[in-house]
Amino acid sequence: MSVTQDTGRPEQAAPAIELKGISKAFGPVQANKDISIRVMPGTIHGIIGENGAGKSTLMSIIYGFYQADSGEIWVNGKKTEIREPQQAIAAGIGMVFQHFKLVQNFTVLENVILGAEDSALLKTSVSKARSELKRLAEEYELSVDPDALIEEIGVGMQQRVEILKALYRQADILILDEPTGVLTPAEADHLFRILEGLRAQGKTIILITHKLREIMEITDTVSVMRRGEMTATVKTADTDPEELAELMVGRKVLLRVDKKPAEPGRKVLEVENLRVVDADGVERLKGVSLDVRAGEILGIAGVAGNGQSELLEVLGGISAATGTVRMNGEEIDLTGAKSDGQSRRARGIAHVPEDRQHLGLIMEFFAWENTIFGYHHDAAYQKNAVLMDNAAIRAETQAKMDRFDVRPPNPNLPAKSFSGGNQQKIVCAREIEQNPDLLLVGQPTRGVDIGAIEFIHNQIVALRDQGKAVLLVSVELDEIMSLSDRIAVMFDGKVMGERLPSETDERELGLLMAGITDTSKPVTVDEVEANLAQTQGKVT
Image (cartoon, rainbow, N blue to C red):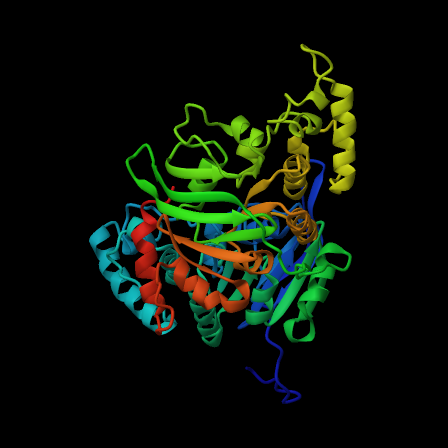
């Protein structure tokens, strides 16, 4: 820290990043409106906001993917033009994207130097990069095998490669977009230690996340965005999750799931030795057995790509399988010959799929059409043997929209006109209001605003309290822990074990998610990574 000559007092360091009056519109949509923010050097600065609040647009402006319509960017006290990523890199800014920008069949070392070669002779660049990579890995505890192929290492290790790429390009400011979305708890904890180490070395980190627990755990300062505007910037130590949620949504939000203890009844769903082999000959489900009772929520935890999607698709009638599935004591055909979504619905199974835009909705169709897909043969929607009663369908859709707080509550808008959270409400309204015996629900709050999360959780619990069975798949451990009455953990197409939420914690679940069944022994993050890497090439 420098000292002024006239007063002898410490001179305040210039912000690492300062935005002044940044605005950006896409046609009639104002993504960012007059945003000003100061990110101080050597700090971890969190940015949170609901889906569509403008966070990603703002970060894309800093990194040069977009250009602001108005406003200024200052880097380390100097006004800086950033019109492309190369200018951001030259200014010392690096970005680690939520979806990694790595070439899968290249090595770690090749990915690090890709686009940053300093010689026409690649051999010279590789030799220099190898020694620099070793230095960076040791200095920042980013251990990684430089000769490993990206497709053969786990996602946690891939994230380290992305950070090393930025550091190799001499980034002093790192932007991380939803960095823990694909990590186990052990990997997330290790990432936080890396970030703390980077901060201790003087690096500045901007962390975009929707997880309030992470904001409270790792950041020094947090800024809140709502509808394209910056609503508040506060010291993390001076706030709490409840206040941040209210700043994000504009009203008080209940962050915990308020539910009474389950009262499980008869077995509604029984699954025995379920096996699925995909078109490439890869076994996706390896003898899965489980059951779900009336009046309970069974949560399926696991890192994405370990069989959860295939389980939902089989139970929902989308895919064929071998094994035995019984619904209310009656066996279901799994061959595909007499098995489809319609036959499942006739058995009392409703399905909220993981991918609402490709499996749950037809985006070009109106909301009122989307609310009856799969149920359009029901007598309530028929005018006669030939025609459907469109007026009755529109009226029922309007009632569903009112009950599920879909905004705007207009049945005549196409599905693509609604935000992700409201699209999810349309799918949930269609499936839940069929009063199913079993609800299959995949990633119920993926990409959903915090206010809508509260509502959807309440609807799932209400269905359980009506004596219905719920099979919940989610990659969000907080969601699994708070919603589930029992938890089954999947790894590499198998169920690794079952736990009660009151008798486990995120560490134990995280180890099971990595295929480690002996959770009583100390385990290193490298062991977790090694296990997860075994399934890496199988993830589609």
